Length: 199
Image (cartoon, rainbow, N blue to C red; front, side, top):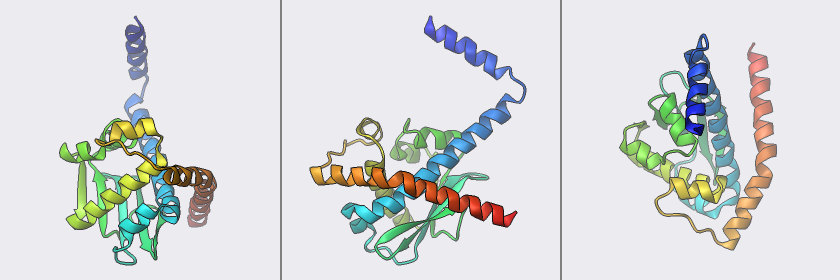
């Protein structure tokens, strides 16, 4: 009964003029927000988590990584600076390695935790532009960031082996959460100021 009501509601939505355009724009905006969250999370986790510091310790300083969606974005760029990852902002900023989702639908599946990145790679939903070794290192770093960013029930869905966090890691996760909102707002203001100065 409930399935029929939902299906009927979806059918009515699909009859709205320009529905495909609205749907595509909504997916774009959702992915844009989630990628920004991931970019800010990389910066905040790299300040606090010893695992991420250890993972990036051997990266060459100035290495740039990016994530985005083909063909027209959105994209984010990151850079290794010292013992941290800096979120450079939106767009492709001279990346050494880039994770590219084939389309908006593939990005939505992975970024909303409906599918793991490993499964998406296996199904060729994600392309790698750059050195394979850099891509593997970026993937391991992303897994660490996801561990500190997502709650346990999401981690249980996206990882084959469920991460078990120690007390210290749980405390670190709490400090990441506490620092996240101010950092997200600060980055949002920076982007808004950049946009207004460019126009």
